[in-house]
Amino acid sequence: MRSSWIVSNSTLSSQVVDPSIKRADAVPIEVRGLSKRFGAVEAVADLDFTVAPGRITGFLGPNGAGKTTTLRMLLGLVRPTSGTALIGGQRYRDIVDPLRRVGALLEATSFHPARRARDHLRMCALGAHVERARVEEVLEVVGLKDSARRRVGGFSLGMRQRLGLATALLGDPAVLILDEPANGLDPQGIAWLRQFLRYLARQGHTVLVSSHLLAEMAQTVDDVVIIAGGRARASGPLSDLTGRVHLAMRVRTPEADRLQGILHAAHLAYRRLAQDVVVVDGVSAEQLGPLLARSQIVTYELVSQGTDLEAVFLSLTGPGVHPPAATGGTARGVGAPR
Ligand SMILES: Nc1ncnc2c1ncn2[C@@H]1O[C@H](COP(=O)(O)OP(=O)(O)OP(=O)(O)O)[C@@H](O)[C@H]1O
Ligand SMILES: [Mg+2]
Image 1 (tube, rainbow, N blue to C red):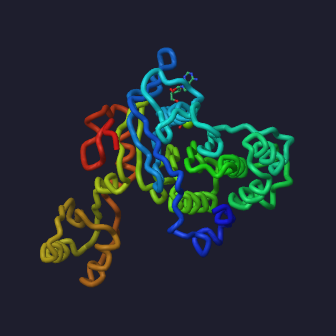
Image 2 (image 1 turned 180 degrees about the horizontal axis):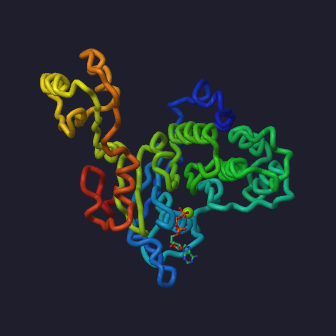
Image 3 (image 1 turned 180 degrees about the vertical axis):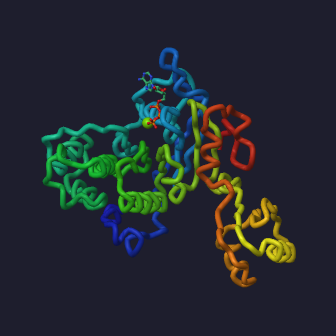
């Protein structure tokens, strides 16, 4: 098992990944009726969700939604006002050898600036009773091998994120709780993180990863828990959310009359908005484009007019949205335990 950790960007999706590898120590994360009040601020209110092993769960919400507070409660760093946050049926503080069970990456992790990356990991390994060789493995895994001798004070934000991830992975934990790990990563870094999280999930890890950007996570996560104002707005498989995406294409053409006939014959719903504008419902550009080409319709514009996933996310998390009205559709409703 250990040797399977030695992966680099190029090998991640190839020979190293053995889909049959499943962790025997896989456990779920269960949050039930979780609330936290800081004085007058209700940071988290009556939150319920479950994170399944072998899947990536995106914990999504805008700034100030209560993500970090929830993750800190899971990690025993903040005491809940009420409710429970359990990992494998236990509170974090009751877990024996927690660094080997739960890996965490929290916001604004501070590293001693004068310490070299390798030395930081060696110190952490010592504290977690993890053998030294593991330090080299995690450096390799997160792509920091070449920077291992550099002082952390000179690290970019993305490099710090990678070092934080390496620290979380030191004890080879079955559960990973990552707060905004994509922050500061460049597009290659985000692509790498995506591949890496998928790799972990395939091995049977339980992965809970927060983000304030759905777009960043949409290609990565299996399940979503969406919160805003401390309250759950929707939870369930991402596919339930994508089911709410409404496709429509706006076509500007001097041949609108002829296009109408073609759409009618193709049994496609459409709306004529102007002399030269037709909106076709329920199709993507990839579907409509070839039909226009086949029909030799002169097209001046072909523009997406529907709601995309980001618009669905914004409608769930935006101001003035109050549960449970926001949780219609097919995504699981507020508070429904999974
Ligand atoms: N220690 C604290 N004392 C007082 N208020 C707090 C404390 N920690 C968090 N809050 C408040 O709780 C709310 C939720 O904050 P939290 O950091 O959990 O949000 P978040 O979803 O992680 O946001 P971001 O995307 O900006 O990281 C905010 O209103 C915040 O100001
Ligand atoms: Mg946060």
